[in-house]
Image (cartoon, rainbow, N blue to C red):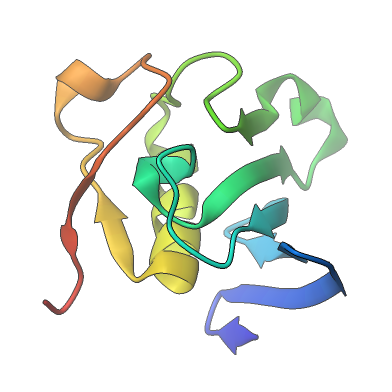
Length: 116
């Protein structure tokens, strides 16, 4: 799977699909459910996500989602942009990061379905 500056390939398959790839200078590993879930990012299919900067000196900026954000919702616009691309790519939806009510929270709802 590739779409411009976002590239993912399937890692292996079981009841959930796992993908590894790159987006905007980040390495990512994602676990998807076959259906949308209230435990997914924005109640979507992405149940687990590991987002790591390509440069090792930025390892303190690792983003982890495991049925909820490990350290609250990311508030960095560069990270949010990368996550927007990932969520759009796998779920076809957009996260409403701009609503300050969601920054720092564990669950972030989608603002709308893209193209819908």
